[in-house]
Image (cartoon, rainbow, N blue to C red; front, side, top):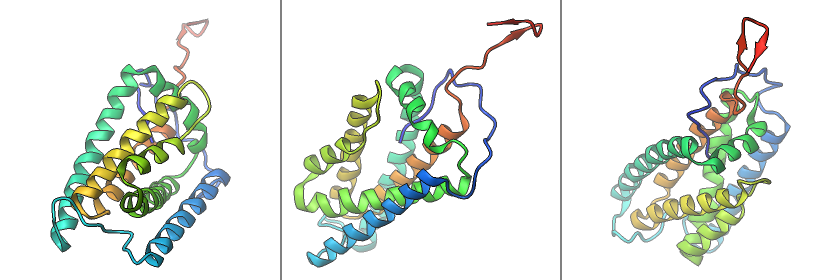
Length: 215
């Protein structure tokens, strides 16, 4: 998920939450948990681990996990920084911020953390853990992108960005043989950007001059 903008300097006051999870967020959390469960179950039925594959680098065991985690942390940090740059320069990124913000406005920190982790686990277990060994990086990444859609002018750019990120996650998985890195990167990116979406109002505040004139 993306969010940032240099012009969004005015940070909105945290909105009151209606509870730990509002309706849409609760539904999304339940869907991701179901996705993770189903993907893991299918992989087990097929005789595979949903958390590992034969990595291109040939790493095994702890080496595979450590290599994957290192790549995941780097990917997460780079992507969060990149989204900040895009929000300053790309109109589609700002339009996406406007489109996505209502879904998390007023959510608690705990709700966003739960959603970030659940979405990372669900999507990585399905699109990378299950589909990459079965269908390859390209197919799984394109499908990942196609399923990320929003209405409005940012729709196609968001799909393209999701496809690029899906390819990055899948490449880390295929290289290292461990899903640890993609899950960590995905969770870090989602959590950072969900919080930014909630805490930053894309509409600039109107300035007052002497309490009488508005700009």
